[in-house]
Length: 141
Image (cartoon, rainbow, N blue to C red; front, top):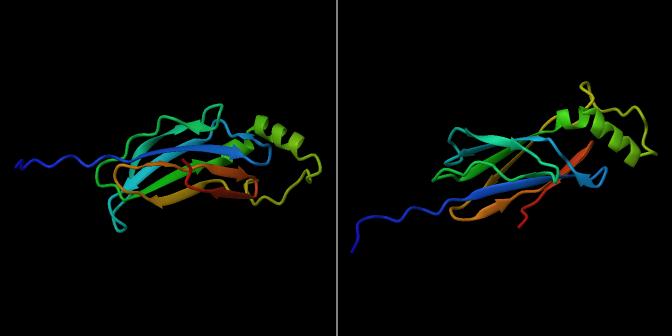
């Protein structure tokens, strides 16, 4: 009988963003990944990436062994303030008011933080459906 224990399989995370106000992927959104081992533990920043032309982050760091909770932080304000995105949104929402009551900074949700629990060995794909005044997430496949 071996006394060595097998390493726990690691979990992995991926995400993508769809801007539902224009029906297209959200390109260039910075995404940060943090993890912790237990609900009372401190968050540890693992790194991040930015969404590609398909709205996907394909290179998020691996989760360390013992991770129980993961947080994805999406920096949405620069995306919505980007002139190119504003033009696409205006074209897609021709009937929408030109001056929206979006808060002091001009963006209602300047960031989105999603926290979820993980178990070893599983892959978690967490899509973000985003628009200027709301968002939704779900566990994808």
